[in-house]
Image (cartoon, rainbow, N blue to C red):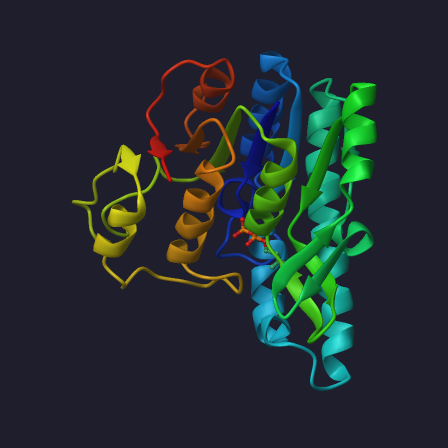
Length: 256
Ligand code: IPE
């Protein structure tokens, strides 16, 4: 079984509120369908989630009623993105089933405490492709929290023990610097805890779910429970499909 996260940076334009990249999403859907593997999918929120979630300070917990309206707006927006992604996958011939975290997860102080896995397994066993996504979720301490696609990937990997976990982004993998500000940024082919400590702490960050460090940390933890953990560029046609088929592609391999 393979776990795939389609990052918000690859299926949306992260700089423009609610801008879906239909062309890239459609092509990735075709690549996923063509590979024909047993899979569970997760997608990020990109500009359908981060911009408004930050404006309403949803990642800091609920302290005033006005935030609830903001939370509802973000939930509606990420569901719209999910529907767009579902339509791309169905169009490509994949029997995808959307499983929103708000209905099957519980958070505690920002951490994903419980995820209802039985539902994922039922659909998977039936031959369907369960797909979850970054969402606003009930939190026992904060009222509401942001549940990221990376947290979902970790929880799913712990239980499902995938042979491969693939993070699809808009860059070739983990880089030595932010390519937007440093044209000399190089790909790190093998990422481990040592790599994380050596990375510069200056990368741009508009995300409410943490910097690139938090994301790499999740991937390193994840490498402990997945056979192989890869980060690759979904903007380059064919890379995801090749990786799904077990071929070697330009990517970062994350090891624990
Ligand atoms: C964020 O999920 C969820 C919300 C902001 C509601 P992710 O953190 O997984 O999204 P991306 O992949 O970074 O866009």
